[in-house]
Image 1 (cartoon, rainbow, N blue to C red):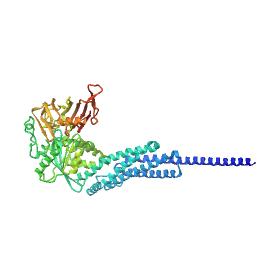
Image 2: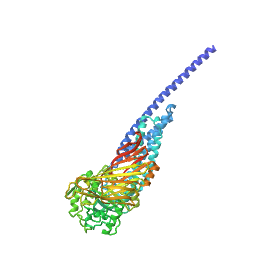
Image 3: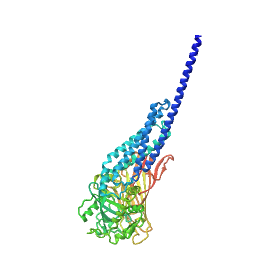
Length: 634
């Protein structure tokens, strides 16, 4: 009886335990389901975050950056809610096999919120700087900004540099933390946001790295705190000179707090001629015309800092000892590029367009508009008026247009259609770093620069095709022998302004090079070591519809060969002459197999050696719109 009673109690107990287990399992299933649904809801919120971030990245321009700020704030708010939701889920308890995913989601959402908060700080900083130019609709208008407001913008720009630097460092830290989160523990919505954020942060960090140095120097250049006076030289590459072209006009540009306070242009034809920098053999060459002015003959040199200092000296001899803070040389291409973007501009009865700029300027220049060097009143000055109209056109553009103009200026600086020299050491250092000064480069590797100067009175250079072939062969003694061929083809017809061509050629190569042979030059050949390097020079006549070929053979200095031997690497730097259009073909041959080579993205072809599987040489085909660098590792 007792046994039956015990069995009955055991059955009841087992039944109760089973019911309890079933209840616990059911509760767990229900709780897990609800938790999973909440987690799904959080994932849905992440999709909304991604949409806001995508919209913010599209709007993060000065024309619309307030919208970007709002979108970032919305994304940050949602990310904050996601963190709270995930924290509450974690507090309620997570099944062990899903705990890692939740913990990772919390970590990810926290870092992503930090990202967006940093973006908000960046937007607020830009808003603070541009507040004087802000319209009521949130867009920016430069045209409506007064000079005191420009001064405020420049002052805030200078003061905000540490904050921008801190934001850049914070973005780098956030990116590092985000990259450390494993993709395997992230669900798809989070992975998508992760790579969106990493891509955007890399772009913003790079952009800030480019912008911050500009913020340090642009206010100085624009006359923040102290007015700046710049000597401006307008060069015409139709008649080529060392730094870009004959100087047609010059003027003084005065800038204070980002505003041009004065710009007066003069014609150098009114000044006395000076030819001290032109050798006698050049002046005696057939076709030489040297009856220009001091300014027109100020840029026979190919080193722009030297030209800038000479131009300042010439200006002071004419106008007295006023302070000059720098020299800016621009060529016709700069103006035509801007006119191609802004469209034609009417100055009184003249329409300046990209196609008519040179013709119309010649007309005004030769008609006497700039004949008076120091007029009592400002003369009829179409160039100064054109510059003013261009600035006005840019000021009235939306900021996207201003960015496009900035790209044009940057490209023209890169291609040396604009050259600058500054008396301010900070500005000059910045310009040198960016290769904007036209300085002849000093290097311990192979190097050359081909400089042509049109010594005639004809504007024939646009019709001259120039090609340079350069070959370096390493012999069995590991000496480097160089062969250069420069071809000129004159496609000009004989008119009043174009026709036969005569160039004063100078080839600059490493100092100490041993010259073996020079062919194709007229008259005496001149070779001398100078501070810029070994210079081989002479006269090159090219008659209309004919071609002339100049050939040079020389051995590079032992120091260059030794550097290549020690580093198992050959480097070549080819410097572009401003205003000159040249094609370039480089061939390199070495005793050892070439294991790696770079050519700045231009077409290159490896050349087989004695063993068909060995690359003993490389051929490069390029142009010389900008400076070029080539490397071969062996």
